[in-house]
Amino acid sequence: MPEGDTVFHVADQLHRALAGRELTAADLRVPAHATARLTGRQVLEVRPRGKHLLTRLEGGLTLHTHLRMDGRWQVYRTGERWTGGPAHQIRAVLGNAEQTAVGYRLPVVELFPTATEAVVLGHLGPDLLGPDWSVEEALRRLAAAPGRQVAAALLDQRNLAGIGNVYANELCFLAGVTPWAAVRELPDPARLLAKAQHLLHANRHRPGHPTTGDPRRDRSHYVYGRAGRPCLRCGTPIRTGAAGEPPYERVAYWCPRCQRGPVAG
Image (cartoon, one colour):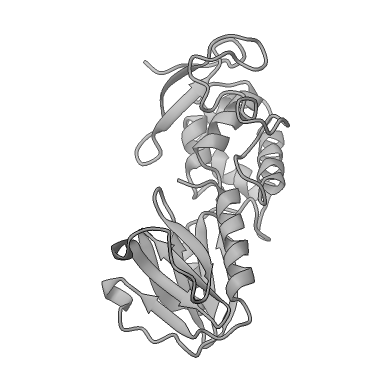
């Protein structure tokens, strides 16, 4: 599932392609909204909310999409051949005279009144890349379950919106705790959240989610994706296991020397 900085970048691409222009083509290829008539409406803006994409339209409508694991938006020049996948994978098309955005394999395509956005997405915690970001509120939500595994707590979008598995693993390393450590064992949770916000903000317009300061592919992460390879800090081979709980269970990476706490059985 994409990290919040990736979704932010997608929203920026869609906003630049669509915002302020009238839709000359609009096709939602999902049963619930197949008859929706959106042509002639102006796209007001495209904004991210954590890992969710909100395309706000003239007339008080919002198109809500989510990429999850396989979804993708691709922007083409209008009239250009679409090459992002077969036609049966297309779930949404939004186009104007200059550019057309095509959504492939989107698992979530919803159309609802903009006024109800808070109801639909009100369960989300503060957005690390949004105007509502609040370290204090995120800390309050994390502290509500002090015994929960750190990795699961960071991945839970109800606590803070935007963290995916890459950042969850890297943040555990930076905090010096294993992904299975309890939230109460974090040495400085406020500092960790500030680091999370800094990393997502720094990476919002570049790929790869680097966390080490070195963008080279084999040096960009301390532990994530480095199973069996040396820890960049101490040289100990990185280990893996399953961390979190459904639906937040993911592959965890950790350094048995640099990180303290329980490990997977």
